[in-house]
Image 1 (cartoon, rainbow, N blue to C red):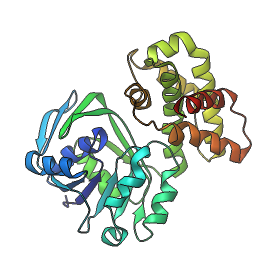
Image 2 (cartoon, one colour):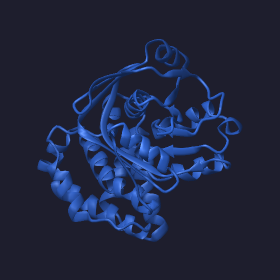
Image 3 (cartoon, rainbow, N blue to C red):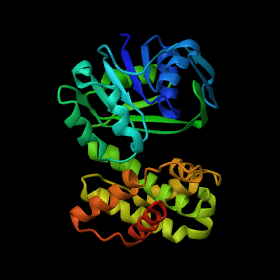
Length: 292
């Protein structure tokens, strides 16, 4: 298989996991990060502890800024830090690379396409529970690590599959993005509002969780996706009681949350289509008031 030149913007839980697995397969991986993190990665590489992959180490190159062309740019920052992070990737250096954002939400594609007109920005999503306890250290919990990509990223999909990741290409960009948001938004909003894991939300606010799942599905359908709210609800009730969302973790730790990228995006799309989403709107407004 062809070795790819891959840059990872934001080597946290998601970016670090992909970086270490791709580097182990022989791809040339550069992690773009703050100076101290970049230096650490160049000197010590990445170390993954995973329920699925075991203990994995790999050498990567750390850099503060992209200075040479790559084949693929993986954008794996939080939505809250995207604008700042993109300063590390000059458009003239990136050129016609394939850009795959694996961010929560749906609104970042327009931003990336405007900023990098010569590149091919391809929609992507990842479902995984991964964290970065310390620079260069990645923790992957459970067996889930599934990547879906829109057409144009076939080489990356092949590389991810060879690295042991469940990866595939699907033709519908809207469905790809909204399928994830149909589950993520309800879980993130209700766990964050309560400051509790998913099991408590199901036990104490199951009706609200079901209502938000239905509301987000209605918006997704208007956006061109084909949601299945019954299947989404079944999936939400199949997960462990202790499951937490990244947004709830961020709120608990006092960090900026992705409320606007997740809940705000649902409301803005609902408004565009004239769809009533009263339960979702009430929860988003409550969380906005808290953060304001």
